[in-house]
Length: 317
Image 1 (cartoon, helix red, strand yellow):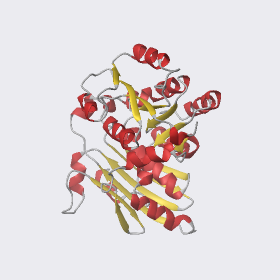
Image 2 (cartoon, rainbow, N blue to C red):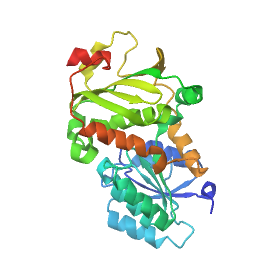
Image 3 (cartoon, rainbow, N blue to C red):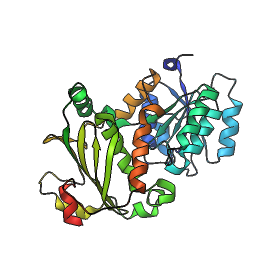
Image 4 (cartoon, one colour):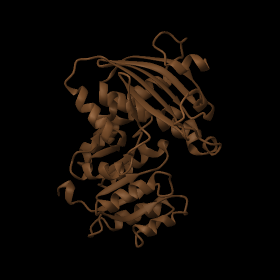
């Protein structure tokens, strides 16, 4: 069966923040959501898309149902995963054992060595695991990728990504480093994956500042010198002198030209699913370096800022 004919989906994490984007992507790609799972039952939005889809709050019953329909027309072909980061590895394995292809939100795993075991399981069950890396599909990023593809120029890059979070954040699983991996995995993974996608793998990495709310550092690749400032601290918005600030500031500056990463996000999940259904999704081999870089930064010791630091770093250090 070719992937572009696959119609049936199951989903884990229906009550999560990102789940509606996955549900919309499934619907707009004319596929079916057969069943879903979440320990929370406040998931009424599903009626707008799949009113007759089955819903479970216990994974045991969810598992039995998927097994029950495995020889019917409702057999699951894909499992979409929107659960907390620390559960991704377990749920990916569950999907493969259920003989389904897997679509998972970033990060696929927190510990990069878990990717090796998942790759072996892919071969064992003859199924694929795909990561949602929607920033790669941003129109401005695609344009930039094509522009620098054939160039040997070393680009000067600044990433300023300030997206404040309220008090709820620290009380949720995202604020628990054991469950999320912390700021680097919740948000930073978007940026580090993008660096790898655009400019190649890292050759040098420095961390100048690290806290629960902010990371700043430097990454050198074959094609770029990258200074990044990543923050969820609302106070850091005040450090940016511009009248265009609303509730975030997400700017990728390449050779003094700005790309606003807060715009044109519509339908990126829909396009991601469309690509996957057409065998053009991002597999482990495509996203491994971004996860390894995130892990490396997580384990790095901070050093005193030098000439390679982001301008905002010296303000807060």
